[in-house]
Length: 187
Image 1 (spheres, rainbow, N blue to C red):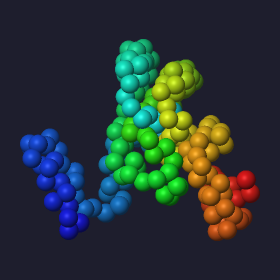
Image 2 (image 1 turned 180 degrees about the horizontal axis):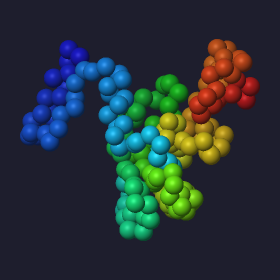
Image 3 (image 1 turned 90 degrees about the vertical axis):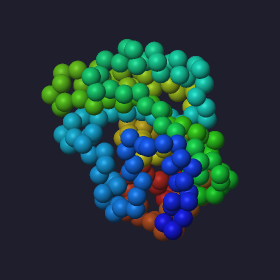
């Protein structure tokens, strides 16, 4: 934190921000910032990918999908993720897809009583199928859904997957820590 202001100085020269959330804060406070946008009890479904660039074809596809999105609280999201992710070698940590500069995908939220819930979920899958050709081949593990298979987990870690299996076998051979996008110790 000692170097924070020096690191932020170039951003601060851009002008007065609408909001400035850059500060040291407790973890729980940081994690609660989006709570109001994701009320408990609603149904949520999303599918995401990583992209190395925002090609014209990708952006046109996003535009076309946005125009036909049937979900009242549906979104097509593009988030910039470049930076430290791209500054390391592929085998430096568990992370793969070091060429990714963006995370993108389709997402929906609806009331549990909405009779169109199944159609909304299907629209997200269809939109995702149209967006996948622009992917690096992987995505952020925490953005995966329970219906994504083992191959998606493997793609997320790429060549690092085998090393993670070895670590899991050494430190968690009984697979106690499995309530997540699991890497089994006996792959």
